[in-house]
Length: 123
Image (cartoon, rainbow, N blue to C red; front, side, top):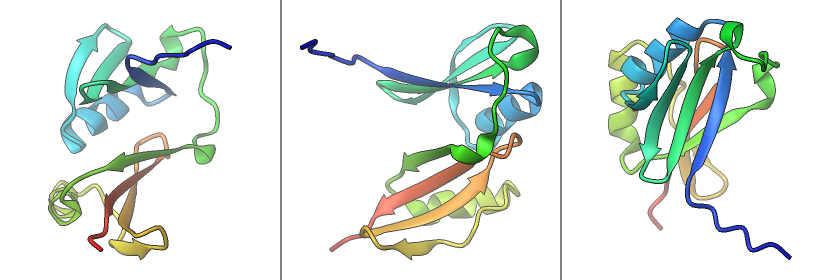
């Protein structure tokens, strides 16, 4: 059995609307750029996790349907994040209680991928 010791994780999203999607993650979600080329941008989510946006027109992998993907991001102050996204006109859903003892809201990137923002509820 292989002992898979993961050092970091990066999810790569291939996009038709590459510039709009880069703008959304950089300006809308306020993620910091870790690496950039003319067709690929890697954003930092935390010390050991990243999300990258690739231009399908310049890559060997093409876009598949975004509707089977949810990007779930845990935050420590969901109210503040929600208010910021309202001000940025990102159209987040209302915050609701979720059955697994969390509060959650959703928004969508320019490619239609669902982004779930959640926070554990105090018990």
